[in-house]
Length: 366
Image 1 (spheres, one colour):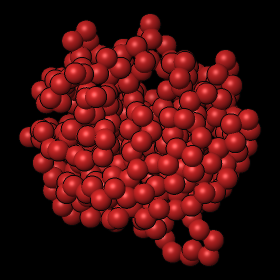
Image 2: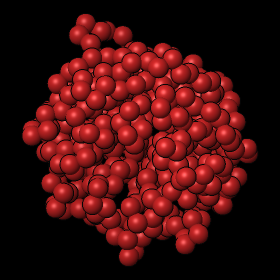
Image 3: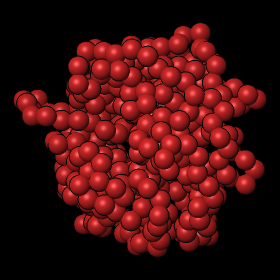
Image 4: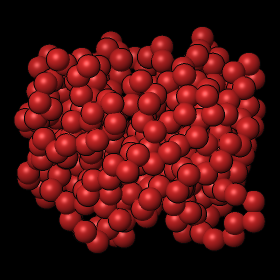
């Protein structure tokens, strides 16, 4: 059984609340028996590669460059790397402008034709075609969002926080924290862009601040984590029409908690039985059980992440381990997942990595 590869995106520059510099993208081998991590590679000279996405073939990796200005040009960037499938070592292929400030999330479509990047401060999303050898071409489309919502500080304008493609690779769902909306688009691979959807938007609770979402393995449900009001929203999803219907909203916090908290990430277990969400400042992973008929959630518990400010986390392909990235304490902490209860148990495996933001786990090629 081969070790898994773990890619960790970080901040290399002090920006805003980020006070510690890292080396770039860190690559680890993960022992599938005990979850232990061993560092095998670290990039150099790539600015703020905070969020990562893998090409479906596994041979290319894409990273946002989360800055407001890049090489004297307005907006951030997206960098492309080739991946050694056995060692995990990365080689920079090229870089393109993201055409918006502070890109914070990106996705690759299932055919490996385009990268879709979310520009948080720019309030827009950008589509970048991929050439046959994994390099990025200049943007083929930029879609600007407009508007505002309830919070005068965080929602004074659009803030695109993620772009997620559905399992059928037909529709893109864009979470805009600034608008309290999910914006829906149809993917047009022939034109390497997005086209208007018949149902263009879904509103969430005013002031919720939608951030990240994940699909249930069945493709019938979507789970959205909301940063500003510490909730998780469940939707039923029609994959033929790309239509969402809200079925539940549930708190990510324990009863009686009154402090500040900003949820960040959400993932469904490979089995489809559980949904997990990260709570920054409460510093926990919240666990819910899924009713696989209705898609509704039942609270299971909270597990402390063993560090501060869990920004992102990942579940290994087998559904055995969860890796929590504690941004402010600079640690990756490994938990074993109980397949029956969904609960998490610390394995004792902890590695130090400055400002971990994004974690991606893939099966290495033997």
